[in-house]
Length: 411
Image (cartoon, rainbow, N blue to C red):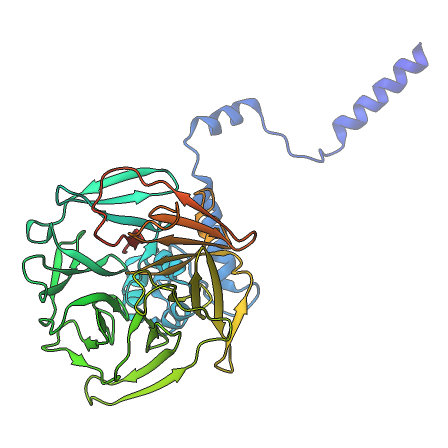
């Protein structure tokens, strides 16, 4: 016992003599420090980061942008931000505008604001009480709204990015552009012929915005939103069934399947026209020489390709224009859905609206004429070539053409 006790005493004395490996803090000192208000960790971290960034890790003198430094992210050169914005998608350009006022100013100068769709296309229907309704066929909901008094019974012949092309019910030759959200109205020159459809090359306010009108006969005319008159194109005796802008060209589809590509200059008045024959598989509309229901549609795909859709009986055949300027039949349209209509057609990427019920590789067709038990809206699956009808709720005027409307927001 004595030997063990002596050994423990020697070990204890050795520990008291040896310097401690870790500096200890007396309880009084610890209580004193804890009573004082600690500095935020973010300040200490930011100070440390600023010192390391300013030194550049050993002598470069490079100063990185920080929140506290005067040359922060908001001070980046406008030329650099302009190049960055030119490489971004429309949705990312919207996000850039939310960073700070400096970035927003550069983004506005780099490119005008672009609309962002927040829902799949809805169907614009005219109601008997002179109001309009937007039917969401995926949720079977009907949203009723009223236009300004002067346009409550106007006829919609076109739409693009929140802008409606309306023809007055009092004067069929009076036409204008209307934004129901901002209540901005842009009058267009008086028409010289009854209009069936109107298309815009870009929303008003964009560079080279042009409005094209397709008459009920064989007439096509062009004008700028601030123009004083319509310029009628000399296209000969032709009967058209669809019209669209594609890559700064005006494309018109004849009932026989020919597609006219028109390059124009409203200032000089010069135009050049190229005619492309229909594909071999093209089938014209059934019945009369001028079919009541269109047999073809022109629409730009989500990839920027020009698509020609041929409607035959209860089937749709899709062609795309290849690099050799020839029509190539496609069996699938992939991750996109086509919305076809007499007034407006559009291609939508399905992945953008996950969970909405939108079907990929499908065609949504709207027509005021009921065809063989298929109602106003039909959905055609290119996978199994099956066509089914979608019921439309609510009252609407059957004599007016339904119009596909894409709900959008502007920054």
